[in-house]
Amino acid sequence: MHTTHRTVSLAGHTLHRIDFAPLTLTPGDLLWLPHHTELTHAGRKRQAEHLAGRIAAVHALQPFGITAVPGMGAQRQPCWPAGLFGSITHCDNHALAVVARHPIGVDSESLFSSELCAELTDSIVTSAERAVLEASGLPFPLALTLAFSAKESLYKAFSHRALPLPGFASAVITHIDPRCLTLRFLAEFSPQLVDQQATVYWQAGHANVVTLAVG
Image (cartoon, rainbow, N blue to C red; front, side, top):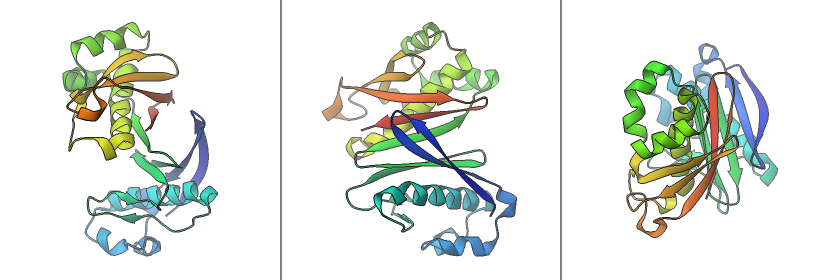
């Protein structure tokens, strides 16, 4: 599969980005993965995304002296080496990965259209959160995309402390500015984290956003 690699800096962390061409994927490419047999029945798009994500992960692990490809756990999550935490995300034809010595979560999303906003707003944010987004000065489609992505990143970073499937209503956005969002945990996310706040950093391109949460 044809891929290109570059790095992106966000909140002091290096994100490794792999842009890939799904149509160039060949069955032999998957043999690079130690768990390739688990992808045998996956669709071509899923196979390409998975491969790109693992390539990004290997780049992210190299500064820590590790070259092994992360395996796949029982819940299909990446298996990171002891003492390290990582996160992988896919969006359109790119994948991002980040690795750190502390819990971390990354997410990339295509910018929502106005039509998608009308369909999804009430399932992503409360009326109070919507007021925060509208007061931010950001175009509402961008603000809502950030809200969605921030909650995804937050769950990835804090999944080790979260209840199963906490949902979008389990953490609420209290502030948004050109650099980050602030979210407050509710009991639905984790009884141990109630009312604690977390910061999610963001950056936006012309058609997508990237968010990063640190646990």
